[in-house]
Amino acid sequence: MAARSNYRKYKGTSLTNIKSKLCANPELSEAFVNDVIRITGYDIDSEGYLVDPESDPFEPDYILVKNKALRHTNSGVVHSTDLIFDPYNNCLIMEELWKKYLEENHPNVASAQIYANSQSQIPRINTYGYITILFDDGSKIQTANHWKDTTKYLEAFMRMESMTDFMISEVMKPYDDYENYVFKNNLGLEPGSEGKIQ
Image 1 (cartoon, rainbow, N blue to C red):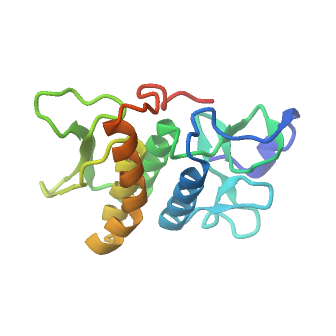
Image 2 (cartoon, rainbow, N blue to C red; image 1 turned 90 degrees about the vertical axis):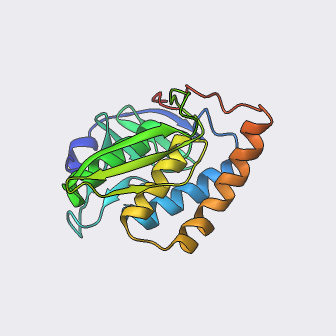
């Protein structure tokens, strides 16, 4: 992480109503942002940046992905050092938040891997499947099957936070319903494109 002052000196590159280019369902994307913030314990500061309130209560550190500060805002100056915080539509964001979470909170995790539901299928981005989390002592946790990798990671966060099956299913239901409709009807969500930085 980097201190906030490292990013204030960069000038803005555009003034727009910003959303991820891959955002096909803005309401669901916003709900996902809220769920990620609630589950991870991060916060959005007054300028729209994702911050870690535990780092410093007065001037918390930005959360960075590929050296870019995650910015959640519908309008305003977008700096060259900003990355739109749209975790539902950008798998790279969820993957990096997941790695950071495991490093800081669960060093006893030996591996966390995405698997396809079908054993004959190689998991690619947005393959129907699950995450298996393997601990040093040999124990493991497995998520339910989901289409988008971002929703797989969201459930993995909740499993690691020991949320109940009922709570997890309530949170995951709107995403699963939407994804089942989209993917089963071949409406796309451009599988393979979500890991790209916008």
